[in-house]
Image (cartoon, rainbow over all chains, first blue to last red; front, side, top):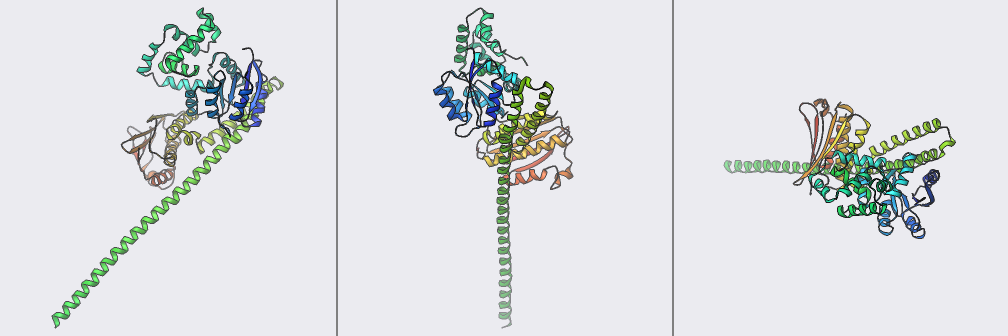
Length: 218
Length: 249
C-alpha cells in the first residue's frame, strides 16, 4: 500500500488532537480517523474497510484496549495494531503480545520512531520499537532453554534465514530481492513459520527467535 | 467441741482460699480474653487504616499517571508536531523539560502504587520494581523465585509488596549495596519473601528501635499479615530481610 490509513483510539481528546496533528506531518500517513473507545473503534472499522492500522490506547472507558485488540484481531485480521501507551510495563506487553498485537510504542516516542514504526509495521508487520527492543533484550539475558533450542530444527534452512532477516528489520521487499525470490514466497514462508511454531504474529516470531538464541544481537 | 470449732474454721478458711484462688484465676482469664479482644480489634483497625491508605495511594497514583500524565504528554506531542516552525534548540529545550517532568511524575506514581500490582499481582510488581530501581541508579536489582502465586489474597499481596518495597528502599538508600536480590517462594503452605543485599548491614541498635529506616513499617505490616519477620547478617556482608507467611496455596 502507498498510504497508511490510521484510526487513533484514545479517550483523551487533547491527546488525540495533538497526535493527529503530529501524524498529519508524516508523508506516509493517509486518512486519519479518531475513536474515543474500543466500541467506537469497532464501529469505525466496520464502516471504513480501508483502515490499515490502529494506534490503540490501553486504559479507556466503555471498552479498553485489551478487549478491543482481542475483538479486532478476530474480526479484522488484516488490520495491524500498534499499542500506543503510557504504561511502560512489561506485564502489559507480554500479555498483549500473546494476544497477537503487532507492536508497542510509548506515547512519549520520538516522532521519527513513530513514523518509521508506522511504515514498517504496515509493510512488514514488525519493527524494533524502543519497548519491543527492551523486551527482547530481557529475553536474551535469560539464556535459551534446551527444548526451545531443539525447536529451532523445526524450521528449514530458508525459513531460519528469513526469520533472521525479519529480526533485523529488513523489509519484506528487500528480503525477496536478497534471496532472489518473490515477495509472495517470503509471505508464505512467514506464514509457514508461524504455523509451525504456533505463533500469532510476526513479533511473536521475533520473540521466539531471541528466546531460542537463533538471533542474539545485543 | 473445741475440735469441731477448729474443724469448722479450717473448712471456712479452705473455702475462702479456694474461692480467692478460683476468683483470681477467673479474673486472669477474663483479662487475657479482654487483651486478646483488644489485640484483635487493634489489628482490625490497623488493617482498615492500611487499606484506606492503599486505596488513597492507588487513586492518587492513577490520577497522576492517567490524568496529569496524559495532559503532559499532549503538550509534548504538540511541541513535536510543531516541527520546523520553531527553532530546533527551543524545541529541544521544551521537549527536555517536559520529558523530565513526565518522568518524575511516573516515578512518583509508580512509588505510590504500581499499576501492575493491582492488575497482575505481586510477582509482576516486584519484577517491575527491580527493573525500575535498576534504571534509577547503579545498584543491580534481581528478582529470583516463583513466577506465580496461589492462595494469596489481593490485600496480602499489597502488604507483602510494601514490605519488599520498604526493604529494597532501605538497602538501596542506606546500605551502599551494589546488588539487591528479591525472592518469593511458595511451598507446602508457606510463602517466603526474602530481600538480600551485599551492603554494610543494619546496626542491631537500629533494628531494635521502633522507628527509623522504615523498619517500623516493616514490623507493622508483618504483624497485620500475621507473618514472621527476621533480619539476618549475611556473610561476607549485607542484610537479609526474611518474611514467612502461612498460605492456602
